[in-house]
Length: 76
Image (cartoon, rainbow, N blue to C red; front, side, top):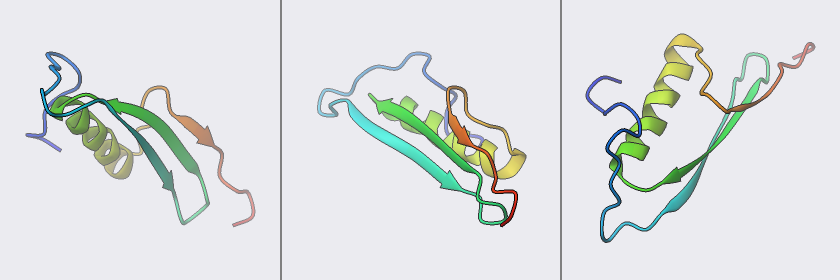
């Protein structure tokens, strides 16, 4: 997702945006593979990083770093 930013460099907390946890949990319907990752959202850069990793997972099947992956079900 170009234009959304690129990670945590220069992340500055917004004065009115407290740190919020977020969980990214996906299930691939074709085989049941599960990908989970926890994020601490401090500012927009962190949200952009979450969205970038989600887009990479969907479009390129690239797993986010530090994600927990449950392998696909061999008998979907």
